[in-house]
Image (cartoon, rainbow, N blue to C red):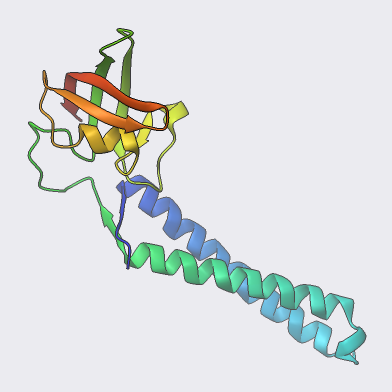
Amino acid sequence: MEKYYSSRANYEKMVKELNGLKEIKQQLSKEIGEAAQQGDLKENAEYAAAKSRQEETLIKIQDLETTLRNTEITDNLQIDKTEARIGATVTFKDEDSGLEMTYTLVGSMESNPDKGLLSVKSPLAAGLLGKKQGETFTADLPKGQKKFKLVKLVYK
């Protein structure tokens, strides 16, 4: 089973979403019961629609419960904070262009590069993980290998 990493805030957001889905499931069960009382289920569009929504909701609940069960909260991980690891905010420089980029290393569920959140499973992070401030690293990116230098490493 795949292990997921998440901040406490994101984990609590997923728990809230799960609770909302469970409330929807209860409402759908009520709707299905009411629709079933309307007679012939083969020609009952409300019954069929509610059953379909219930099935989708049950799948979402199951997926979210599995994810939550296999999630480790990163806020309190005991890690070497002299190295780039999950939870670190890193600034690195492209050795060719001189362009500097800053990202916070997060689990794949929270990844959003446009907001500065880089998955530790990304090709860029794969080259970066374990590096110390001042070290250079190579990342195997879709457009080929690139060299970077880890300029700044901060844990908040």
